[in-house]
Image (cartoon, rainbow, N blue to C red; front, side, top):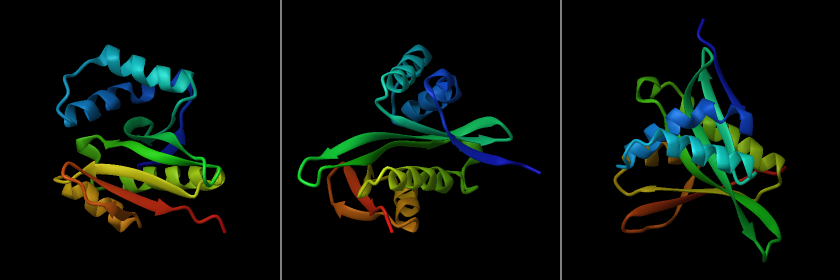
Length: 155
């Protein structure tokens, strides 16, 4: 039986997502640069600048999501931007992205955030369908990116 687990990684586990992060950058038309990917992920985690969840399919990293804090002075809260979400092409359409999003939402709820926000390109229709299917609501149309937001249920 195949086992899928999603877990938050620490700085000493950055290697779990470096290759996936490189593939994510390639998806967005960047050159493959493994050293850059490794350094970037390691720096974010080592400096406590982001939160990263990895999806493990039988202990193999197949997807990740990275969250960055977004502060609201008026509300005096820390919300979260779901900045990166990637699932290896061979593992798509298996519910992995939804599980990563759920982990991000659970984290935001546990940290008393009011919302999680994300953006996707206007032509990334698969991502748009996914985000809308899990309850994200489009906030504002844009010429290049669509902004979505989902409230965190803190009941």
